[in-house]
Every structure is written in C-alpha cells, then in structure tokens.
Amino acid sequence: MAESYFEAVRQGLIGALELLVRLALPLGILLGLGLIAAVLAVKVNGQKTDGEAVRAIATRVFSAVGLGLLMLCLWSGLREAQPLARDAIAWKDSAEATANPAPEAPPIDQFGPVFARMVEHTYTRSLTLPPDFLQRIGSDSVAALAPYLTDPTAQNVSRLVDSFKRSGEDVLFTRELTRLDEQPMSFDSSDIKVSIHRLQEQAYDADFKGIYVFSNPTSEKIHARFLVDLPQGGGTVQGLKITVGQQTITEPDDRGYYTWQGDLAPSETKQAVVEYKSIGKSTWSYDLGSNRRRVRSFNLEATVDGPVEFEKGGILPSSRSGGKTVWHLTDVVTSQKLALSFPPSVAARDAYLQAISLLPATLVLLAGAMILAGWRQGSPLSPGQIAMGLTGFAFGATVMVVLANYASSGVAVIAGSGVALVLVLGVTRVRLLPVVLPVVLLPAAALSPTHTGLWVLLLGAVGLGGFWLLPKLNRSPQKAA
Image (cartoon, rainbow, N blue to C red; front, side, top):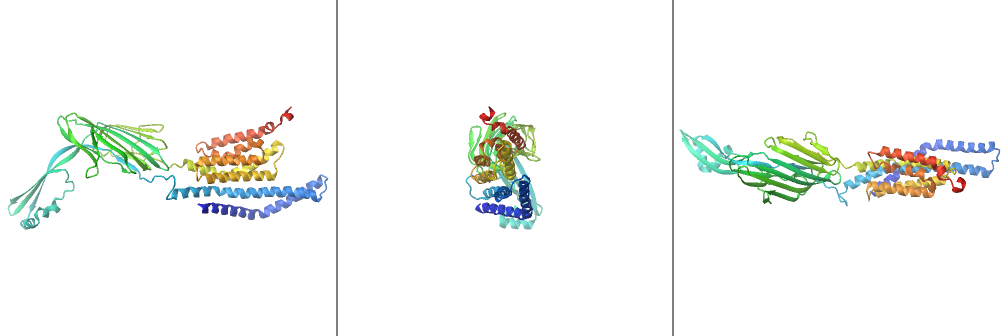
C-alpha cells in the first residue's frame, strides 16, 4: 500500500511539472506584461518609479504568481487522491487476511420438503433365455442376468422373487420386485419466515424457520414420509432443529436427508418445524418443489435489512412494505422458485469516491471564496494567507484518504473536512466562516448519493447568503453606533 502513496505523490508532481512546462511561455509573457503594466500605472499616477516602488510591485506580482503555482501543484496532487483511494479499496478487498473479512459463502438454495404416502407396488419383468444361456447361469448364478435387470431405482425393496420356467427349448425367467414407492401428497400449509441480515458486500446472515402442516386426507391409515433437505450452498449451518410432532430428527438418512416416517390415521394431522441459521452470498432462493407437489396454502415472509432485488423468471412477491417482502400462494403447483438477490453494498464506497473526486474543484472554489470574501470584508487577504489556507485544505484532504483505511468512509470525509476548516480559518480569519464553511463542506455533501444535488444547492445558498451578509456580520459595535 505504501507504493500506492508514493506513486500518487510521483504522479502529482509529474502532472504539475507537465503543466508548468506547457504554461512556462504564457506565464513568462504574462509576468513580464504584468510588471510593465504595474510600472506604467505608477508612472501615470505621477509617482516615482524608484527601486523601492518597483520592488513592491515585483513582490506583489511574484506573490500572485507563486500563489498560482502553489494552486497548480495542490490541484495536481488532489487529482491523484481518487486513484489512490481506489487502490486502497482494491488492496483491502484483495487482502487474504483482514480485521473485518467479508464472508465468501456461496448462495443459499433451499428446497421445499416432501410429504409422500408410501405405497407398495409390485413390478414384474420376464426374459426368454436360450438354452446355452442356462450354462452361464449355472456357472455365474443369476448375476449373469445383471446387465439385463439393472434397476437404478431399486430402493425400499421389501420383496424380491426370481423364478424359471421352461418354454419349449427356451427358459422363461421372471422377476417380481415389491417396493415401497413415494406418492407425493399435498401440504395443508407452508408458513416460512426468513430473516436476512446484510453483512459486507453481498453477504448475508439468514435465519430460517419453516412450519409445515400435513395430514391424511383418506379414510384409511397410511404410511407416510416427511423428508427435508438441508440448504444447498451457503456456509456452515447452525442451530439446526427439525421436529415432527413430538419427535426430533437429529441425524440424516443414508441419502443425506432428514426423514420422518410413520403411520397417519384417517384425518390425522402433523406439524413439522424446520429451523436453522446460515451465511450466504449474492442470492437466497426457495424452490417449492416440482409439478408433482402441491401446496394448498403457501406463505413466505422475508425480512431484509438492506436493498433487495428479484431474479428474472422467479415468482414475484405478493406485497412489499419497507424491509418486509411477502409471498402468498394458494393451491400452487409450480416448478418455479422465488429468489432474493442482494446487490453489492457499494453505495457508501461510491459516495466516498465521489467526495474525493470533488477535492480539486473544491480547492479552486476555496481560493476564489477567500479572495472574494476578503474583498467583500474590505481587507483583502494576502497571497501568503491564501496560500497557507489552501495548504491547510490540502492537508485536510490527505487526512480523508489516510483515515479511510482505518475508519468508515463517512467518518474519514467529515473528519478531514473538519481538519481543513480549522486550518483554513486559523490561517485566515474566523469571520470568513460563513463563506469558507460551505465550500469546505462540499466534499461531505457527496456522502448522500441520492441527495447530493440538494446538499450542494443548500451549501451554495448558505455561501451566497454569508457572502452578502459578510460586511454586516463583521461590523464592529463602535462602527455600528
């Protein structure tokens, strides 16, 4: 990072020297013409052009030129403040270790749970085998038929029966497989609340709670399964708690799902509660399931303490109020998902860079304000006072850039503006406060990205009002009497 500071100083000096080279000839001509004009003015007024008068004229001219050169150097240096601030931000973002790191967790994708009735089905498959194939069965057993009987969905098998029957010279092989299959059923209701707290950048901390109600709508007892999948992506899942009725599910099954199985009497209802906390980034989404899953009443309430957007192709919310977004769906069957997208939290960063970009213009405005304020007051400031005031402002601007590495950008800009104001008024006059204050605070006006124009307008009005009232404010009681 030190290299960035040195590079900024080097670029500022190079810029100032390049401007001086380009302006050397015009400045030399203007300086000579200024001296000639000053001598002629003295001669026209009938005064002697002795050495002392010429030296006085030369001093004023060279003081003005020196002030201009100083402004040129300070302006060139302040132009490098914004690139330096950008380098500092990039350096902090790319640092492998930092005091306040931003989480790098992937997005969280939460899938809706599954409620299904377990129904026993028997599947039959027959193969006609040639006589020579029986020899392979004799040596390799039924494993020789494996390529022809592969069933990738052979799960929850309760019974498996193989039989052989001669059919002429061939043999008829029959396999009967009885398996428990899931028959998806509708949830009575799904009520979900997710509270999302924005962290740095696009990261967030999600607090999830889902209450799912399901029941047996038939007139006979059924064997049912409730299955929950943990969120895909995201960081470490904390505070995980899954309960169905009075039963707590603590461990996943062989497939990694948290599953409840049991019998439901006719019209019996169960309530399942799923709770967890996790860290994610960029987006948070909830997938209702597929076209096979229906929910009679679906409600999701998301509370977000920051800006939020919605992904294209997702289910749009039913209502929004402040930081609360609500989805309310009835008898929904969909393969769409609802998703929250979190834009980068760069408003403060952009405002800070905008404030830094105003420093060169503020320097020029401050020089003009001090010159006009002194004239309006009746006692103009000397070039030396103006030069020291501008140097004080440049020091305050340096405080902004350096302090932003240790504090928030808003604190850095306000603190730097305060330092600049104290130094400027200490060198010039406290009575210039009504005019100098609005100019010095101009960079701070950029800290409000949505109201920068309004703040600039107000500061301009205060500065013009102070300039108009300056003689009255500075009038002594004796003169007023």
